[in-house]
Length: 454
Image (cartoon, rainbow, N blue to C red; front, side, top):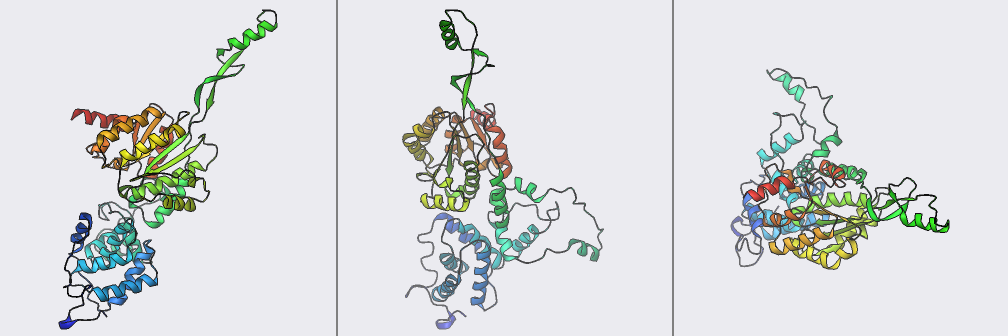
């Protein structure tokens, strides 16, 4: 039970201040928006608040948040000391205890909304756990982290038996032949990374580890002797004739030498790219550690507010250890975005080292930048001139109504060779066929036409 103050009021966090005083101080506009989103939720009528907080913490732990018994006890004490007379106060008190990283905010918000009684939302999440039959479940895309929250709260629950319900009702029973439905892996191929549950994300990472990214060799200006070559080797032929007294006895031939290009990955790790960046880096790790794909070297950089070279971390065979080391190296994970400044740092410090020998650049970003558009356009042009090909992977292309309206996207789009989506396993599989095809431009032509028409 929460201790009661005079006249049944709970004590406030600071002495001499009423509960709820100074709300909103030090919070970002997005945080205040989340508060308004959850103010219509009713708190449980069960007075056993200590037990409810404990069960709520268990749901958060099943959703992936690292919560132990110590933090549960701290949350109970925090609610007892701070008190609350508004639902927003209760939300932010628990938020302060259980949320440590930016990527945990959405998971906490969804579990809080489900657990502390929003019946209609819970009903929608229950429909997500049923077989995906059109017109049976609500035709509505789940918000980010919503499915993980539903799985955490419905852990161990069985989906209702639709056939038994149909038998009890007066409606005509409809049998559905599911023998031709897609397998789990086939469904995951087209599922948005942001909408995956915890188990689905783990399975998707295993599927990404099996993907390959083969590339064709590059013909160089140097030649090698080849009896079947199409080009005559005049120097070798004349030298042989000189040794034979000027008589040409054989016409030697040669063929251009080939070499493998390098792959350079520039991955945006800002807050809006969190889930997509993690999946793409799993894919890049698999490419960097698989022999026989043809890449001479694989260089990887992350950027948010600063540029970080994580190439040596990706050489670690264990993917979890590699990405943990990369995350520790990149201090701006889940931060802001300064694409122009980071590209300038890459062009100045790294381009001559890693972009030689016809390197292919994969740029993974949503293009939402806060830098000067002129700076971004100038650095993108310099990057484009230094690389053999620049392929931009943007998760925002998953929307059919996507248009180049953001300043950063307008500045970057003219300076890429191909513009493709990167929101699912299928989109990364399509990259394998496009990376060696110089004629592949993805969606660039369509978007450039829309940009020029304005």
